[in-house]
Image (cartoon, rainbow over all chains, first blue to last red; front, top):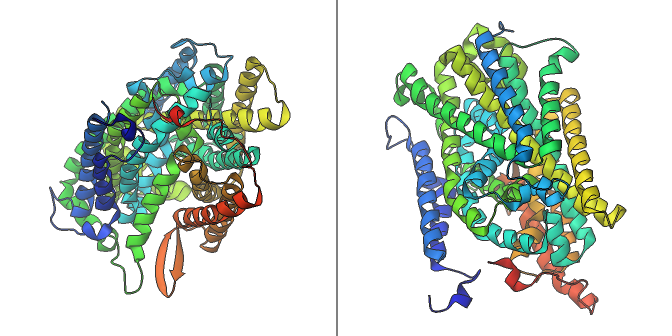
Length: 68
Length: 515
């Protein structure tokens, strides 16, 4: 990065991944549905469990992108 | 009550004895001078990424969580799953805010949130408010951990009358108190490794084996009443169950890392990097918690509530008995012993860390600030050890003599109270813009309003807020921390204008907040 001073503690565009994650799980109309099911599990349940995994991957991506 | 399950009981006791030994042996692990408070109370800030993962995981995902979340799914259905978005959104917060706090605390030798606020805002009364909030919010949380132990001991068939009824709990707590006193944070850190492995094994086996017994997930969800399967779609002019769900998740997430035991776990990490890595690794526990919530549905499908052998357990422990009953119903005795030990030991780790965190707070921000201003290092560490004993004894007395209902209500209030420290602690990690007295009044406004809301809602988790004819039922903690912030922002210019000099000095510098 050209401007290491600015990066310290400031905004980083990679943090948008966190914003996406917040919206995806804090807006129940997205996922308060039974269909489609997966292995007999209603969407409400598998969707949120899936976001645990996506959230972990996003956080790892941010970690590698932000830490030098 | 059912017969004593000897195989399960013996395995339970053997595992308990193992971790008790481990707790005492931990004093010599990564040896440090336990007469220093940061060695006893923060493990010398030497825990790397993996140990921090076990420690913070064992700390946040408590035994009570593992009993209560599936119990809520069993009783109330979909709303229990709020624990999943809750434990998803905590990690961006951990990633962004807490490495900054870690650095400034490491630099200045801060051990508690009270230390940080005292240094940052230079106001001992604000620091006192943060400290008292932390201790008061933690006490009922410790008491609830005991509920986890009570339920599994009861499920093993151990029962008695009078003092004998509480004897297993008393033994567990004497052991806990003794190894916490002698080993400090090293004890729960080492025990957390064993406990977490047992919990993971239990969760994975349960989620694979029980659905096979019950004929697959399709059959399990078919057994759940339709009204419990999804959130109720909100009617006109209200955010209804959706608003309640989202505010519970967000409010709980904002509150979680403000709890003293979370802070203690995080500050014991060896670097900011270890904390950021954990933000990506700790969701492993969230995933497991989500699976365990499903176990509440397994219990519905297995019909354990209708089985006569568990009637007494349900009568005594309510829906908290759902998971133990399901395990007794589905697993061979030896595995029941392992699963119950995981839950029982799971109570000891957070209880130990909570008592250490409260002890650190009292010692640093009450005793040293107001009573003995110049203790020697040894006096300070000794004081903390004694306070950790007193805190645990208090929790034990509470759970034996006070109905569980009150511990649950106080724990709900605890969440509302602890979130009021957010402006000073979390925003304080970013900015010194706020006036310290404005923060104190914001804290007071949030605390009073939040308590009033909880009482008015008869200690339901959500408050039926109505604004301009529009219903916004939601978690009082989130609503009142917004009030708190509004007050703090509105009063900051006022207080700054009244006192020409800034009321206090900030002893931290911008550069202290990162590596």
